[in-house]
Length: 316
Image (tube, rainbow, N blue to C red):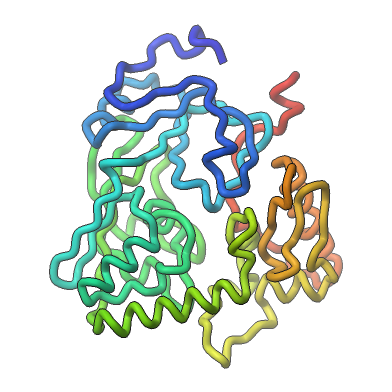
């Protein structure tokens, strides 16, 4: 992308990088370049940039890349990635307010220190911005259950508060306004003893490490559970309509294309075994969807977000 195609990019106080490879910013370590990567210095910098950026330029807010495949041809957009200045965590009474760049695990720990129970966030990869956007959840709790409000900067640079009614929380999705950048969220949490909360999180981490390929390059769960809800973690949890179960039933645990593989440890985790392309990962995922449907009549829906262009389109 030449600068002639973006003739009126605003001046910024943060960092604006042209033709920025995104592979090192995603947990799967794949993907092509973004036309630009913008890392705003603060909220004012973000507001100014979006207000002055020509309306025809697409923006893509990106978290820590924990639930994302960027296709090999890259992304024709200005990617906005929040960092320092957007990762504060504050507690007051039963409320926790976290910047969108604050990691879920850090929010859970800070809340526990204050005697507030957001323990379900401890094992969820990514940041609070992504957790709100995807209504993240596990162990029977969802972000929506705790959500009070969030602050966003809209595509025209306006800073405003957004409510749960506007977000329309559903299983693994919300209705965030197009082009809006979520900058913080306020959550309400029940009280608990800090020592007990930390002990619960330690047990959750141990269980996660025993059942999930945490040492491999993955993006968390590949597909949404057909049942329409997360695992509860309880002994009476029903497995029949879990994504991993229908993948197993179709004989696809360990299935592989190129460097992409459905994990032997947890078959709903897609991993980059080394040298995988985004095309390998997406092709494997689509192959799994097709074969699961042939086996059970169940259509798996992607939980991993896939964005950008295939390499062939970029080369044409």
